[in-house]
Length: 419
Image 1 (cartoon, rainbow, N blue to C red):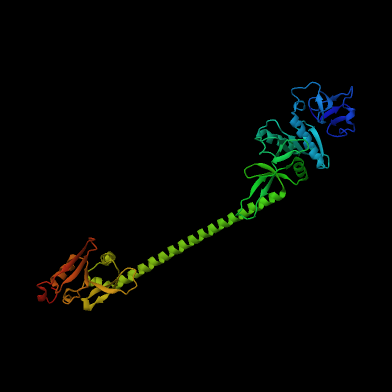
Image 2 (cartoon, one colour):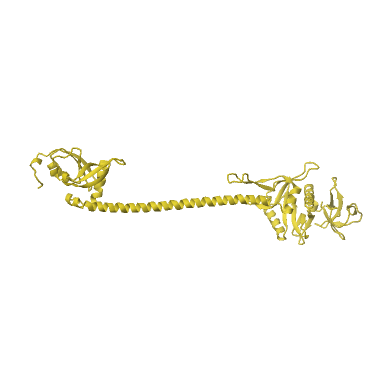
């Protein structure tokens, strides 16, 4: 059954309108003898009648199997009428079962704009349809400049990919059709990034939803995951404001991270530069130290190239921080070595002498260590010792360290000078 029929002279009739859209009364077609009316879909003969609830419609004399209008379910039939009534209640011209001139689409309800042009199709879609079919049919309308809203009674796989509403059938007489999916609002209170924003479905009468859509107070919105909803522009602006805040916060976060990276790179550069300067200063200091000790090296017969190794062994042997003083005549022209515990604040104290002349060892302080680089110097010390001595042989060539207590030599008293 359908709401429209075609008369040879009167043209297209709409049973949902008081004047049948052709200036005639329902009595002119209901139970009128000899009247020939045709189905706008299949062309078959139809007759006018009213249901037990008073709903006027047209029915086929013989129901054809391939005519969509003839095989509509009662739910589909009532939902179409409700959509048409909602469009008209919104102050729009809304006609049932309108086809395009090329017959590439037929709208359950077509709403026209102020200039009489097709504006929006309201489709009661209760039969199965795939998401691809829904998008294809939506695009087919769009090619003719017509928007569309698909309306269903239950969850369908296509409803998230095209503009749609899911409605509930009135449970009893006097109740209205209710939208419970597809019309959404953006919830974000308080409006700070600490509070998550989300889209929430709202429940409203179908007539209100259709009015909002036709008046532009609700429009399609495509979420980030591709889901299509109806919502108010103000909610879109609110979601946009939060997205902008998120973008600004993310940009600030990236800028802060970039600044931290820049500062860290600058700190690393400065640290590397400082280390390079420090190494250069240390090199200059070592060169100056080696130049200062050139006379001592000549006296002791030491090679300046092994002095750093010898110094490391002195530090290792003492376990303390050390510095070299000058050659001391009172200590047999040996090089004075001062030491203190590492990281201590006390002053350096004299702890040893490097390569003192053997003739100066007659009254050697008991706590003062003699440091020599090889066995030759040890032999000189041993043959000329006039008092007990502590000797550390720190050989930079072999890497060995030997600690010896030297007793006075019996022949030391007879030795007046070096041979």
